[in-house]
Image 1 (cartoon, rainbow, N blue to C red):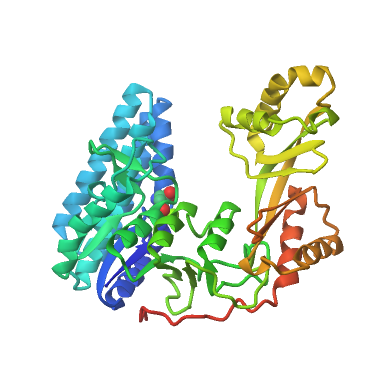
Image 2 (cartoon, helix red, strand yellow):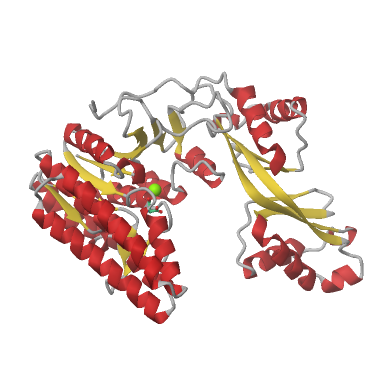
Length: 475
Ligand code: ASP
Ligand code: MG
């Protein structure tokens, strides 16, 4: 059985982090597949360099590229002194990326396709460095670009994998390496079209790569090493008593990631869910901590609300008027408009009187959407069937998540009681029929107070006890 170990940006960004990552890989039993992110900050720096070049500042762009290349060189020299082949490989990657940035500067244009080719440098460089470091630890490691494995469509910047093809390629590329006791170090985040053009799977998508490989290989576990000890019950910058959760179901994890808990890429959940593989979020810098295990189904542990997450920077759009009620297709027209404006809607609520529909969107899309809705509803507004379209902002959505909420009476009462005592005004509410997410809309000014109030109300829930033993004997 194989195990997939994915190391995020901060886990490969310093000599110390790489050393820790190497020890974790060395100590992991059985066949190991390593997946790496670009070093922390590199992807964003590469995107900035591409934009700078497109804006006609080749000197500025070049200096970013030079800085990144020397940071990578230094990491490699410290992690694997004297590995001249890797140094040459790293240099080739840097030269190629620089050439791409230069051509963007000449063209004054950076297409998503060019940008993907440029940002891929981050993960490619990491894989060379980490493979070299693992060899310095005595493992037969080998850098493997995911462009050879993860077949995708051509939606550059946010490409969708062709799963069956990617799975087949993962088995044919990685299988022989694993059989030969070798440790592949695969680039996260990137893929390629069938024609071989480099793509990326969306920001933060290295987890996705790890889950795809785990599913393809039928791995026993998919270990996601990051710089925190698992998924927290709330953002620790907001809530002092926030603590790592021992266990989450896939659905809970997905709910949470949509509402700002940045630990896991939402789509990363899917390939692993389907293959029934447990995903563990672990800390490279504290590998003995139990971390968070994400399983297909919730393990009942008596908890009700497991986590409280929130997302600010939003706007609440309300369409209001008595003439809307009982008119079939009205909501469809409203959401056709949001779709036509390419605005993603985070939360929807409609009262049963049907006198108003409100929904939450990113704050910076509010004005555009209001104008588009007013155009679409010009007739209804003129006839006063629709009174007004309003936009309130800045708004935050606070979500209480936990499968234990399903069928437990009184959860909403406790939430609202806690918010009432904290003096928080709830503007809108939504609960999915799955009953494990209650989302509330509050002003952004009250976001932190609301998160604290809900978290503290449910914090005695027994969610902190580890439920399963660690499979990896990390030091
Ligand atoms: N390096 C990519 C990013 O920063 C992917 C990842 O880190 O997961 O978005
Ligand atoms: Mg990352």
